[in-house]
Length: 87
Picture 1 (cartoon, rainbow, N blue to C red):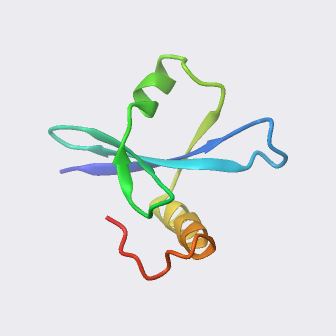
Picture 2: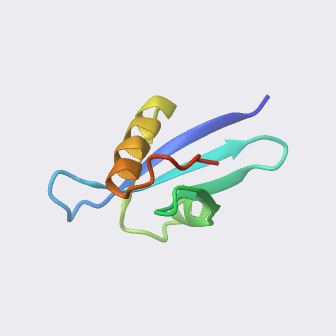
């Protein structure tokens, strides 16, 4: 059974620790890490692996799928991508 874990990347230099990116890790036989992009799609990324190795100054916070989807909905509306399907 595969499980997907969602993360918000926050920057401590932004007031209120604003979320700057949304990531997900799809765990399965072949785990895949992805970042949500301004084109309204998920794209492969090495960020989560590199973060665990200490290669970033941003903070990662594990969040629920519902929280991730709520922020994605807010962002896609703001970006004018409301009618696009997220894959």
